[in-house]
Image 1 (tube, helix red, strand yellow):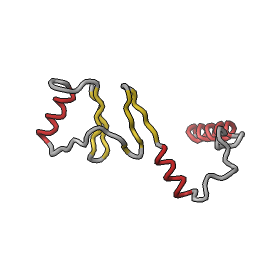
Image 2: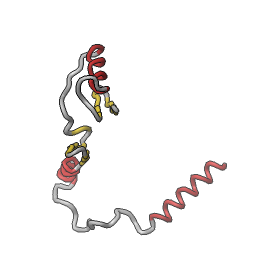
Image 3: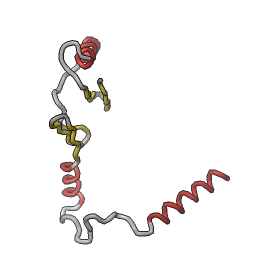
Image 4: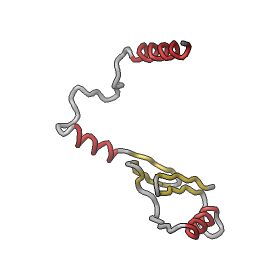
Length: 110
């Protein structure tokens, strides 16, 4: 099994089996015959997502990216009014969503 991701001119390949005769090996050889390709080895980050693989488990993290955003946009640190484990929305969010959906439904009917 081979899963491909593509962003502009980069391919990201996930595969279950490598080596001689594997679908991954066949794909990469055929690709190299048609295009000038460079294998950059195992991926460690893609589009600000850090990727680690450990015992067949893939872990995705944006910790470094979030830390860089905090450093850029909150140079004084996270405000003391920020509460961990509290949704960043008002308690009236369900009512606002319901009102927005009903307004949209009304527009679609007209």
